[in-house]
Length: 355
Image 1 (cartoon, rainbow, N blue to C red):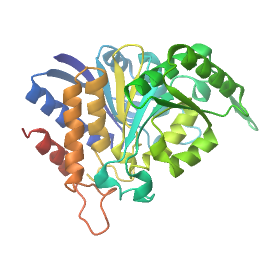
Image 2 (tube, rainbow, N blue to C red):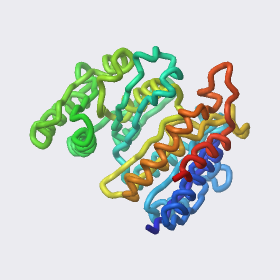
Image 3 (cartoon, helix red, strand yellow):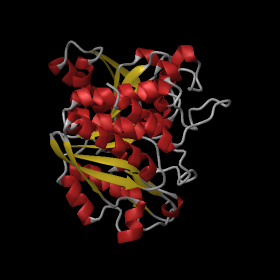
Image 4 (cartoon, helix red, strand yellow):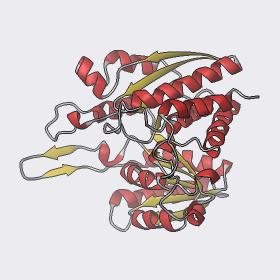
């Protein structure tokens, strides 16, 4: 297979973890006979510094011309002041909109070797295997915003069509998994959530009658994610709720650094990134966890390039490395010696290249 992939290292630890993801991607290409053409481009805070724009036109053009986009992380304290004229996050919202990636998939699977890494009891998290589908291009993040000296407002708006398309993605995933879908809203308070619940109920009855549908209010969902996480299969929710709940769910696995994500639209092209932030406090120290970035490469192969066997092999290699004790500082037990970012990448590569 031949494929063009846009690589956006971004800010903070982004370049460090993406370097390991790229090594794995190149190793897969060499081992399985694929030709991946990688274009590394400026994005986020780094692009603000270099070009005065978090999403420069050449970067956007290259992303639109690629089969997939691999992103590290964006942001940093130098761009987070309330009066900052440009923010890296503005570029990310624009990129998602331009790519039409309305469904964000965030899988959370607790490996047996890491059942002790969570702050929750191992008997609570052992066996967790769930996936969030977060609506990504609507809601309060994209609504009209107003601000004066003494007040501010953010409009939360959804259309029935926006709800239908993301719920359909989640329901299709449910059909390939355990046949359970949990829809999360705040319908006891919000008009957008009442529409969400009505549209979801109608769509599921019409198109997916065999999938078991459960509705949960967002505050109850936050509680049950900690109390009974094994009960969940696929969860679908709106933009802001999904942003918050997926960070909570990430701690079931023990670390934000472990988890990948895929942002998908109507076609095969997607945006792939670990869910962690840019972590400027540890940037440049070579201690960041690259597993989320490497697993994002697996999602890229599976969803955009339809290379399921290669994706499975990467996920197996990560599980084998972790099972053998290849832990970075965020996962290492207090008595253990943590691996560097590069060494963790080496641990995956050595298993990936075995017969």
